[in-house]
Length: 134
Image (cartoon, rainbow, N blue to C red):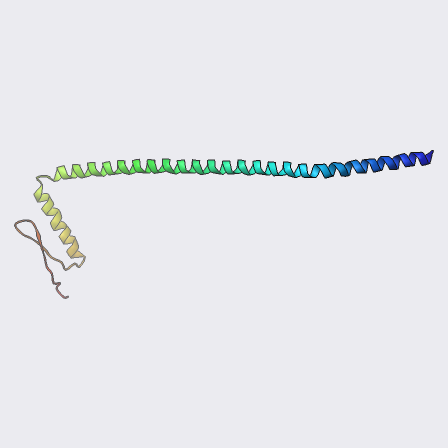
């Protein structure tokens, strides 16, 4: 009786071992296919995510460039308006312009400059080509 139980257990063990081995032989190729399919899906999802990130970064750069261009346009409008105001205020103020010219000449002279500007009747400067040696 013990021998019959032992034989049954051995047969059962052999049958189970054969079943495990058969399932491994069938399951390994199927698992490889499944693993490759899942790897492909993961790579596709990663590539799609990377493409979306690059697209969003490009859109952000475009938006930033547009805002910078608008800021530059507004700055240029401000400079143009300031120039217009200054130009309007200097019309008919030749005495003030002459004062600024002389004042700038004095500043240049105090810095040791040797270039002399002499106004003529047409208000064009005559430049002294030679420098006076010190």
